[in-house]
Length: 326
Image (cartoon, helix red, strand yellow):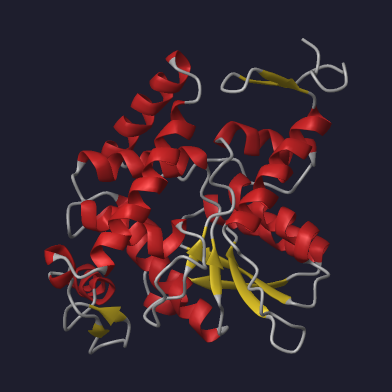
C-alpha cells in the first residue's frame, strides 16, 4: 500500500476519505486539520497583543490526545508573543498509571520549555481515586467522581492563571460519543450549552463570567490518527488506559459508533457536522428567552468552596462529604 501523496509506504488508510498516507503526510494532514479548527473557532483573540496576550491553559494528562494538542499548539504559537500557555496536569491518585503519564508530561514540557503545573486530588481534596473506587459511597462509576473533581481543578487553576481559554484534547471519537449520548438522552438544554461551552467559534458564543470558556482543537481528528501522529513524531506519550475507566453507557455508545464507522465510513464526521449545526440553533433559541431558557437555574457560589453552582453546596463538596463519611 503506497501513500497517495508521495508513493512511499503508507501507514494508514483513512476509509472516510479513501486516502492512504505515509507517516509524513499523516502528520501534515493532522496538523492541517487542527490549524483549520483553530482558525474557524477564532481560538486566538484578534485583539491579543504582546502587552495583553491571550492566556491559555492546556489540560495535559500525558495521554496521546493532550500530548499531540500541546505539541501542535507549541509548534504554531510557542513563539507568538500574543499567546501565553500553561500546561496543567492533574494527578488523581491512581497508583502506577498516573505516575507514568506524569513522567511523559514533564518530559514534553521540558522539551518545549513550556510552563507546567502539576496538582493532585490528594493535595487539593485529601482523596485518592484508588481509595474512592474502593469505598464507592455513591455506588457509581469511577469516572463520575473523577469527572467532577477534574473539572473543578481545571476551572480553579484556569481562573488563577487568569486564563482566557481552557483547551482540552478531546478527539473526534470523544465528541461523536458525547453528541450521540446527548441525542439519545433527549437533553436539548445540554446540546445548547455545549455550543457556548466548547463547540462554537468564540466570536459566536454567548460569553459568561461563570466559567473559563473551553476549546477542543482536535475534535476533527479520529483517535487512531492521533495515536499514529504521536508515534510518527516520537512524542513522549503514555498509551495505557486508566484502570478505573468503566463508563458502561459511554462504552455502549463507543461500540455503536465504531460499528457504524466500519460499515459507513465518515459516520463520525457526519454525526458531528449535524450536531454542531443543531447545537448552534439550540443555543440561539435558548438565548431568545424561550421557556427552556427560563428554566435554567441561576448560578451562585458554593457556601463551602466558592465554586459556581446552582445549589447551596456544589457537587464536588457533596461528593467529598460522602467519601469522608464512608
